[in-house]
Image (tube, rainbow, N blue to C red; front, top):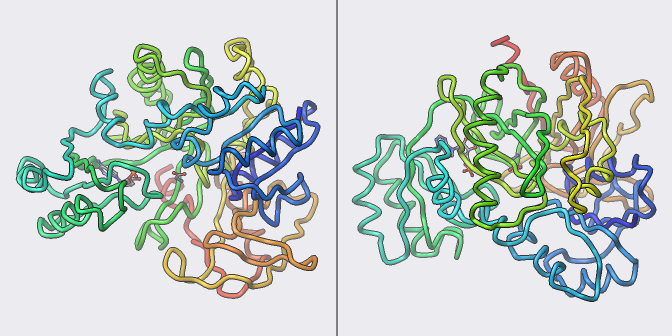
Amino acid sequence: MNVLLLGGGGREHAMAWKMSESSLLRDLHIAPGNGGMQKLGIMADVEAMDFAAVERYVRRHKIDLIVVGSEAPLVAGIADYFDASEKTQVAVVGPRKKGAMLEGSKEFAKAFMKRHNIPTASFASFGQDQLAEAVAALDSFKTPYVIKADGLAGGKGVIITESKKEAKDALKSMLEGEAFKDAGKRVVIEEFLQGQEVSMFVITDGKSYHMLPSAKDYKRIGEGDTGLNTGGMGAISPVPYLSEEFKQKALNQIIIPTIKGLAKDEIPYHGFVFFGLMKVGSDPYVIEYNCRMGDPESEVVLPRIKSDLLHLFENLCSGLLSEYDLEIDERAAATVVMASGGYPGKYETNFEIKGTEADPKWDGMIFHAGTKISRRKLYSNGGRVLAITGRGGTVEDALKRSYEQAAKIQFQDAYYRKDIGADVLDLA
Ligand code: AMP
Ligand code: GLY
């Protein structure tokens, strides 16, 4: 099978690494890829949002399968484009536009959950000409106020504040299109949920599904979960505080109703669903849906899948998902993200990276996110630079392996959190 993987972050490196182990793989093409993926495939200079260019590439290289890493091409309709194209027979891992709306519009996701009785924070939504109504509605919510831009905002479209003034300002700047442009022209105000966050994942063809290992992501830049939100500074899997009882509740109250809801609403879906959940007391609530895998969650979830990923994708696309037997590796995994100093604010790149040659006996993988190779040397090329994944019998062992390796890697102003997983180990 010839595969085109779209993306160039740690998540896509983890996917490329996993697919490269597959007996079904002929050529792996990656657009744009990064410095760490060069060993695994052919780097393609194609812009994922330029569907016609992707189509030309697909035809030229006889691609059988497109794997879409991030949400933007899905929300823009890449799967619809190729489903409609009679000239190519290519299959796409990732939902069509309608299904991707679960991530592409918070209001759509909220209405979907309401319609299908899926537990989520109570909410109200408003459009551009409703600023006064939105401000008035703040009174019906307890603090802190949670205000969300409706559309895609790269994980930055959420304001949580105790201050009514800040809440009003956020509503105003979103609805006036200053913050988040079109993504903020509709807003959702929602109830604040107090609890512990956890990410659960399924792969589904809209009828059957497989649960993937769950994970916890560390979103804040600073230790002790302080400072600005980032794309994610580390992750662990499994999540020690997730009991079997909680997983069953999540399955029965959220995951199954979501898949049934998609079918009921006649929304076809072939791909991953990422459930961002809050555990409130012992009950699960949906904070958000994503129509793709997480990053850095993929860097701990995919190493815990024993099965051949391409075989899984083949079954997904040919209607045989229910017959597939997904095998999970019992080892735990942890990843620590090494970032450029200053991220998620301003940062510099182009620093040489040293120390990425791991001991072959080390049980882990160094996934690249923002790296590039120039004259056979490796350089930083983004905010999040590397994700160092360790494996082990327990999350604690896995973390120890990640940190051992991270300590050996150097580049100027490298930053990583030293407390990934510490909170859950304290709880255990
Ligand atoms: P989202 O983009 O919807 O995932 O929100 C980003 C982050 O904001 C989440 O990961 C949570 O930490 C937080 N958050 C979002 N919605 C809520 C809520 N209703 N209650 C508490 N925290 C929330
Ligand atoms: N790590 C959070 C995300 O991928 O959305």
